[in-house]
Length: 310
Length: 314
Image 1 (tube, rainbow over the protein chains, first blue to last red):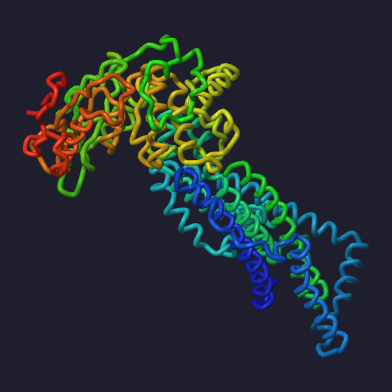
Image 2 (cartoon, one colour):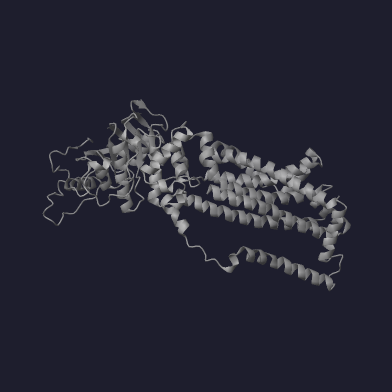
C-alpha cells in the first residue's frame, strides 16, 4: 500500500498548523507565568510587574464578543464554501458542499462507525499523551536537577529529538506489529519531547535564591523538590503538557495514516483511496474540533493551576 | 514591655509590633550559642589560580552579641555569612557554633537575605511556616507562626501572597521565617539594604526589639555604616584582599559604646562613623562647624577614652 506524497503532506501540515498555534499559546502562558514567578522572587522589584500598566479593557475583551468574533471567520469560510459549491464553480467530486460533509458524517454515525473511529483515536491520543508525559517529567527531573544526568542524557535525547516522527514508523511496526502498541508508542514519543524539553529547562533555571533559602531551612532531596523545585516549575509543566497534547494529535495522524484499520487517520487514508473527499473533509474538521476541545480542557486546568502556583 | 526601657523618642519609632510581644519571647528558654571562627580562609578558583576572598580570620562571637560586618565590596563579608550559615565551606579553618563545628546548614542557625526570597505561591503564613524546625506539630506550628506574624506586625496579611505585599512587609515575613526556628544564631545578609530609608529604620528597631526579647547571637552583614553603629555591639571591618594580597581579612574591630536602643544623633557614634568610613576608604571632608573637633589627619583617634578601639590586624 502506497501513500501518495500529496495527501500525506496535506494532513500533516494541517495538524502541524494546529500544533503551532497551541505551541504559541502555551509559550505565551509560560512567559506570563515566568514573569510573575521571577518578579515576586525578586521581592521589591516584583511588585513592578503587578503595577505594570495593562491595556485598557475594550469591547474586544468581553467573553461574548470574543466567542462571536472567533466564529466570524469559520462562518465566512462556510459561506464561501457553500456559495462556491452551490454555484458549481468546482466539481462536486473535488469539493463537495458543506451539507454533503454533514451527510457523510451522519451516514458513518448511523452505521456506528464514526463513534468507533473517534473513540479509538481519542483513546490512542490520551494513552500515548499520558505515557509520554509521565516519562517526560521523570527524565526531565533527572536531566534538569543533576549535572551528571544532564551530561549523560542530554546529547542522546537531543539526537533522538531530531529524528522526524515518521522515521520511527517502520521500526515500530516491525518491532511491535501493526497493533495499538506501535501507534501508542509513536504518540508517546511525540508527547515525551515537549514535556521533557520545557520542564528540564525550567528546572535548570529555577531561581537559585529560592533553592538556597530552602536549603537554609533544612530542605534536602525529595523535600526540597516537593517544596520548592516542583511548585516553581508548575507553569512550565503545564505549558509542556499543552505542547505535548498538540504533538500527540500530530503523531496520531502520522501513525494512523500509515497502518491502521480504525481511527480518524484511517478515514483519511481510506477515503483517499476511494476518492471520498467529503469524508476527508469530515475527518479534518473532526481533528480540528477534537484538538481544540482537548486543548481547551487543558487550558482550564492550566488556569486553575497557575492561579494556585504562581 | 521592652519599649519601657528607653526614654529616647526616635523619629522612626514605627507602629510595627508595638502591641506587646508574645509571652514566649520574654522567656530565655532557648539555649544560646556563640560562634567561633578559627583561622578561616576561603579562596575561589579563578583564571589566575586560586583567589583568596577571606584569609586568617579569627573571630569569637559571644552568645547574644550583635556583630555587624562591614567592608568594601569584594571583601568577602557575604562569603563570611554564607560560611557560618553552612551554605559554603571554608578552604581552611573551623567554624564552631556552641562548641561544635558545623557541617552544612545547621538547624541552630537561620538566615534572612537581602531579598525576602519568599516562595511566591505560598501565603505569608505558609512562608513563615517553612522556617519551623522539622517535626513541629501542626497545631504548635500554626500557633508559633501566628505569634511571629504578630511580632513582625503582619497578622493582618497572613493569607496574602508575597507579590501582594510591599517590600518592607515581605522582608518582615522573611525575618519572621528566620525566627521561626528560634535560632541560636541569626544571620542577616544586608537584610534591609533593598528597603526605602524609612522602612529600613523601622526594621532596625524591630530587629532590636526582637533581640531584646530573645537575645540570640546576631551576625549582620551591611554596607550601611549608620546601621552597623545603631545595631551592633561590635563592628567588624573587613578589607579587600585584592588590594592587600598579604594581609589578613579583618582590618579592625570597633566596640560600639552605649546601650541599645541608641540615639541615632549621638555625637560619639558620628565620630565612630567617620572612623569606619575612613576604614572603608571614604574620607570625610573637614566639617565647616568648629564644633566638630575631629582631625581628618588622625581619623583613628578615639574621642572618649571609654571607647575601646582595638586594632586587630597586624
